[in-house]
Length: 107
Image 1 (cartoon, rainbow, N blue to C red):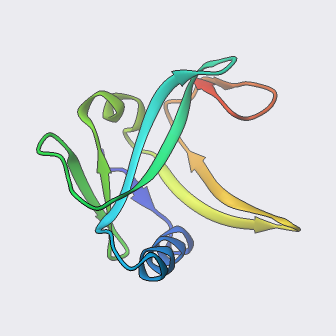
Image 2 (cartoon, rainbow, N blue to C red):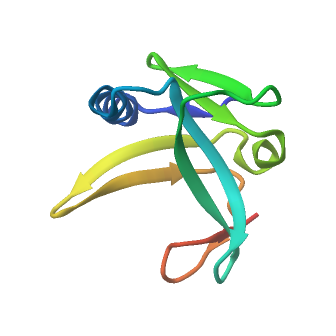
């Protein structure tokens, strides 16, 4: 199962990479933290790691390390603006619950 981006997320990432002047894609991963146990982490990729799984969606490459992939299979990353707030939204079919503050999740 792939990790995908919506057109809105891909557009935002492409614009940021262009403004940044370097980078080949986005790294999506998870880390242990927060009330519920896990949190998403995002970073721009300049150099891929040999063990990365690579997915392409709307012309943007998404890099995922093997350990994170188990928690991210089937995830769709969206970018949305709601009033004055904007940011990435994760649609992860593996999530069982999220914490009240929305910063972490459990699978």
